[in-house]
Image (cartoon, rainbow, N blue to C red; front, side, top):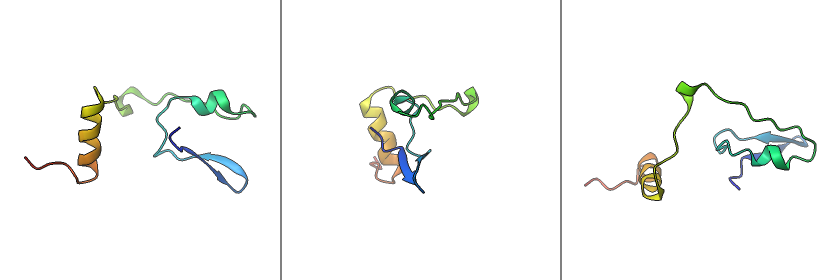
Length: 68
């Protein structure tokens, strides 16, 4: 879904920058090798309120936001 898993030296590895914590990798791993761990609450990032807010944040992070 989010391309968070890649093969490295014949093993699946998680790209943490792409991981959204959805758990899809855990439920679909045929070897049951994937685990999902909670991060401390102070390190968690709440998802955007809606698509518009998400898009604004994404553009701002990439330096493409309107400067109105």
